[in-house]
Image 1 (cartoon, rainbow, N blue to C red):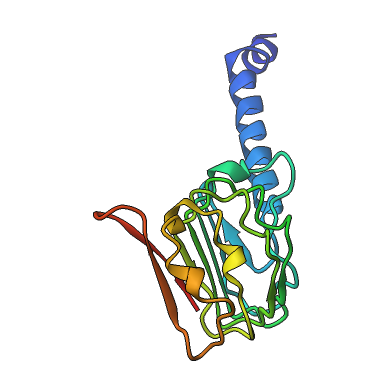
Image 2: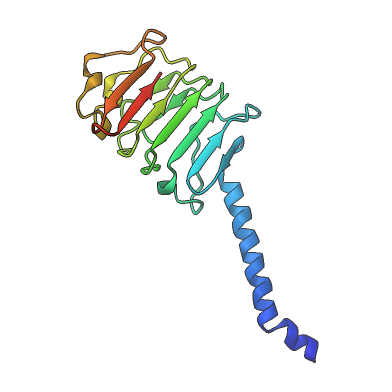
Length: 174
């Protein structure tokens, strides 16, 4: 009888708590796309095999996408497009890096809900043009240093530098 009480008291509550914790971590691990690693504030996709074919999205009820501040994508040759709704859930996003990948197209309104964006790096991709319309709504480009550029043609233009304030700056690197 005493063993029954021992397993149905505080010890059992601790065991159930531990089980729920393990299930929670397991669920969070499943929410991260294959070829990516995720934390509460970062998504990192650099494993080329099997790779990603679409911009990484977290599953519902996983890490809150509003808390993601950095997305790093590299070596993803099958990632070709950023659609208008791909980045919108990441409203806290400050740094977006997509390098050495197959990126060919970025929708004009892709960053419409990413007002915290400070740095974009699209080096070594397959982009042939990128309009200033992609960035005109962002606070860090309010002085429109990019307004004189209608289409950027890499490798001729490698960087756009937009001043936020004299002390801070933000950049777009192509």
